[in-house]
Amino acid sequence: MSTFTNNPSELSPSISLQNYPKPLSPPLPAISKEIELARAMSASSRSSLFSLSASEVLFEDQWLMAVNKPQGIYCEAVLTSVPALLLSRSKTAPVVPAIDNTKGSPELHLANRLDRDTSGVMIITKSHKVAAKLVKAFTDHKVRKTYIASCVGPSPYWKRITVKSGHGRSKFGAWRVYAASDAGRFLPGGSSVRDMETSFEVLSVNGKRRSLGESLEEECGETIVVKEKSVKCGNNGGGGEMQDEVLIRAFPRSGRTHQIRLHCQFIGLSIKGDVKYEGVHEWDGEVCSGHELHAESLSFEHPMTGLPMKVHAPLPSWATHLLPES
Image (tube, rainbow, N blue to C red):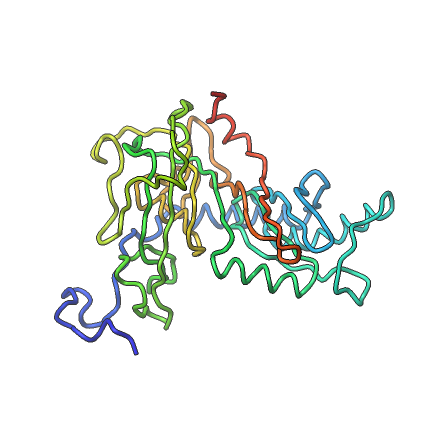
């Protein structure tokens, strides 16, 4: 039984007739539809020709493989290209065997997914048994993830911040941010608002490295529990026109669709190129071919050996450009 209808007097007049929570992040910009369609068509073409190279394999054993997915390639294209890589390598060197295999070829599965334009670490398992264990680890939030994002907006006053909110689809089907207190309430179409939490730390502003001091695990900084429309986290209070290039590291504590992209938009630091969530389409005289978000690392317990693992994907050029040497 849902609890949000127990006290109708607590609902705002704008939603009391429907009993649906109100999304707090803005709807998709009109410009995003055309740009996203063009990007999708380009990615479909590139994905149809994609061939996974040995240099993109970050780790492999008899149970799983970690790869560095390029930007603008669909996850399914990476998965379907794995057998060809394994076959080509078998002609020149022994191939790491797959377990639980009675058909002569690995039972390949995606353990995690990345958005089309997000690059970085993806795990591919080689059997149903390993897939089930690793997917459960993701579902139970036992996999620690870090992402790197290039954002555009006012320089943040904070070094570290944690955002807690709700997450769900609006009546038009788009993913939106909801108040944290809305978690559990039903949405149009029968789904419900789920909790969403992301921690962020600033790495550099306009190419100048920020000093962070203690690790994020020891000190998470300010926590924002979302109650109303987007917060202003810039040094200019959100009222000016100043736009800085801010490189951040994100630590998603939950695994919601477009989580980091939504929370970046909400705090006024939309990811560069992320036109769906108010990111700039052009920057410094160049058109962005996609959003600049990179799955930097995954840390987890190996599903078969039980040993701790951390897989790290090399940073793309847009990130290294903004992260000068100390």
